[in-house]
Amino acid sequence: MKTVLLLAGGLLCTCAWHANAQTAGANPTTTAQPSADSAEGPDTSGSSVSGAPAALHGKTRAEVYQDLVRSQKSGEAAAMQAFYNGS
Image (cartoon, rainbow, N blue to C red):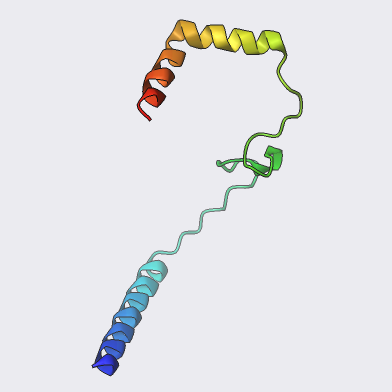
């Protein structure tokens, strides 16, 4: 029984691989790849080990306070409080 299941699984994998190979080779594209400068995605060069942005220069107390006031006026602080209050 194990031999039959092994053969059936191998046949299934082979068929899937063959179908994928036919799909990939049927319509090749000749467009140029975008350069790394214009590619989208996260730039990890400025990140710390934890993935957070590297602190090249920290915010001043005045900047932090202005962020707090802005988030309170826009309702962002209240929305976050309501979201995290349940957990």
